[in-house]
Image (tube, rainbow, N blue to C red; front, side):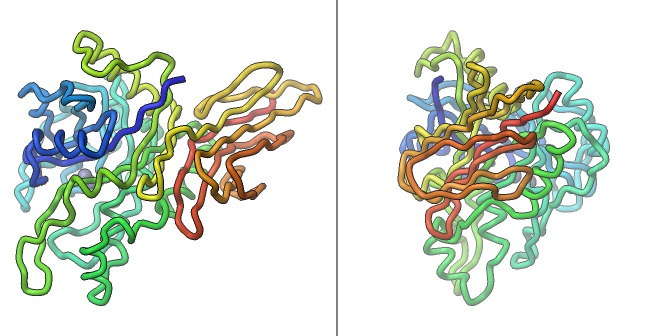
Length: 362
Ligand SMILES: [Zn+2]
Ligand SMILES: [Zn+2]
């Protein structure tokens, strides 16, 4: 398996971000990202303009974020080089898709795109110019996954006058854990069908006012690229700079996200490269995103986890913690069906969240 880490959900000057693609790519290089996925609102112009390519060792991938006419139901779309539906200019100057969320989610799937609900439980009131954009259309089963961790949403959520200055100065220290409601929903949905997850930065580098100073950058791309990353595990290696294989590499990364062969980590607390969570059953190895069909025999499934740093490790089954330990990894025997995943915590801060391994009785 070959592991690559990237930043997902980034806005540039093609929508409401303040950084050019070149600047974003440079910040990604400096942060050592293997890939990034640009997701401007209702725009893939960056792709048309030739930005989907290598920037040194970073793959610059172009996706987009679509929203409906009420500017709700933001949806991240990967691996589809066309916008779906027609658009209308909204009162704030942004665009809204004329299709309903249910319709665009369905259409994107039909055309082979991969989609994740963006910041589905966003709540924020600190900046009237940046209201929350939650997911409201739950009457659909066509999305691939959920964004459970969004740096920007979490940072803004508990912002108060009292902690505002602290948060501007230390944007990375205020990030604690994935959104609890999103995690709960994600675990619940998995009782019914496979739903995967990603973590994102939702980088805009917005300019806001602070203590009488206007246009303070909240917060630069360079800073954000040190926070939430999504790591993918691929069967084939990615060779940096190989232009001929770029589209193939991109396909593999998007597929790993869709399949859930991935985990998220807050790299501010350490590089999570090397984390592994897999299962052994009857001589076969199963990875995150896989499903194991338990036969009617007494053989147990053994969950294996390895962590690159000493942490608190929780094994979760259907959203409940069934085992907790401290160390660099371990094993856990399973006889019961359920959706299993691993969380790693450094004191009271979440560091790594894996995708599920699903175990089902036949
Ligand atoms: Zn959004
Ligand atoms: Zn966004």
